Length: 432
Image (cartoon, rainbow, N blue to C red; front, top):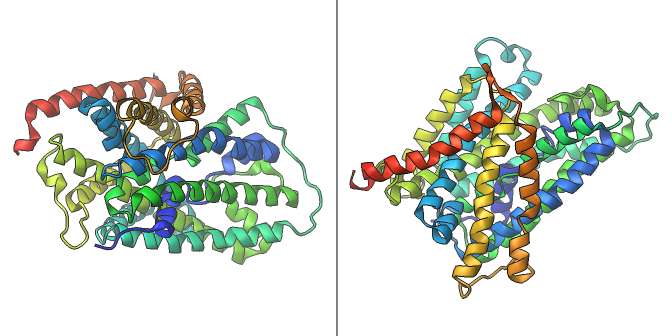
């Protein structure tokens, strides 16, 4: 089986984390150009770089299929390993509901009749089916497909940046408010998260000890540049940021480059939805596979196709569940996603330190600088941001029930993890 090399792993990771500047419009509208640029420059330093360094070390020293689940299980034992997998899969429910919506939103910009009635739901389900079939072809197919989609997605923004640099009259600016800045940070955390998702396919990566650290650092740089450069360029154009909404890049492209550039950006938005969902199917579906191998799920989830070693049962079941979630009208998808994902990320930082203490002689082709102290302090920045997100969400309500705070729903889902673990051990799935 041919495995992923650096370039396709960078492209796949890029879509697992970013998918281009789409989704940044709310940051610009709330924080203004200057505030948005500050948020987009500071967040990767505090949030993304520590995570990428952690993933680089753990993926290099424990290059096993299942990634973050394997790290936490080895460092902290099977109970905490299962909690890591549980949190990641629960977060995926909220995360994966976002991308079909993004896909249909931009498709509606190209063909307005597809944005009404039952079309969004049908098109979202069709997109999921296509991504499932694509993933059955193997990790290498997804990785090279992500590389091609990255070029298609970013080309219109390169043209947009060039058009925006032409002399423009000074336009109004929106002052950044504290609420706008915090809202921007929360959205930026979502736009900059997902670095550990690439770890679950370690068994399908060529020379993972060398490939992962290089891919992580290259992707951090690529994501930051593709976020900041378009915003800086549009600031130079003088367009008022206050009217930006999700999908606003299409309008900006139409104003600065004409109808053809607006359509090209809309096509990129469609590609973004497909590319991000497709890459994350590759990541998330490896977790049930390794859980089945360890006896937490029925053995069927561990079945793979002989030619590509893809877990076809896991892919089919997960995509079916995500399709069923398309009807949920979540208004707090991003907040729930960040909160639950953040807790799983904290377990990974704990695993980094625990492995340094428990297995100091474990070969580490790449190490987080600073010794044990450096590894211990690495998670401080992400922990602070997660704590701020928890505090921010303490009064927010979940859709459909204004009496249930978002934080309360998140807590219920987290507490369910130990219960599911106990049930799984009692049922003895391994014997099935």
